[in-house]
Amino acid sequence: MIAYVDSSVVLRLVLGQPGALAEWRTVRRGIASGLVEVECLRTLDRLRLREGLGDETLAARRSAVFRLLESMDVVEPTRAVLARAAQPLPTELGTLDAIHLATALLWRDREAADLVMATHDATLATAARAVGLHVVGVASR
Image 1 (spheres, rainbow, N blue to C red):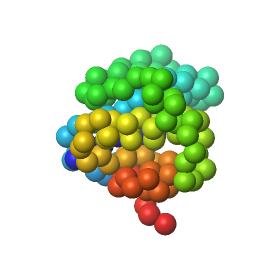
Image 2: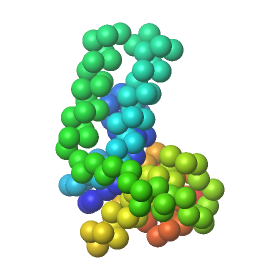
Image 3: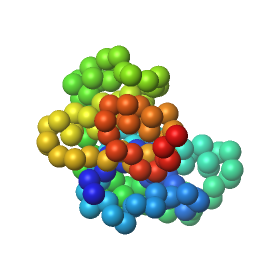
């Protein structure tokens, strides 16, 4: 499976949280926005400040984020991605999720390949389904 992977998937894997993507082992190629690194590292920093995440644990989690991203194709948020994200969408979606969805759609169009949206975010999952992407990580409603 080729999957666009958002930060919710990466963070559940890195933090060892329950409900991590069951299909993770079947992802043979991961695609992610450059935003994922920023989102994940900001979340880890918040955990350090709010929950007292220790230095060793923080370093290990940051390293895990970097290793996961090194194993994926990371797509930087280009002007084309931002322009696509600014266009009207069939469902309500915030800015960062719109950038994730636009990145996935532009990658799919450029590569002419089947792409699955891997997310634990229900709002992003709904928007992805509304534009025809298959979604894993969030059950259909």
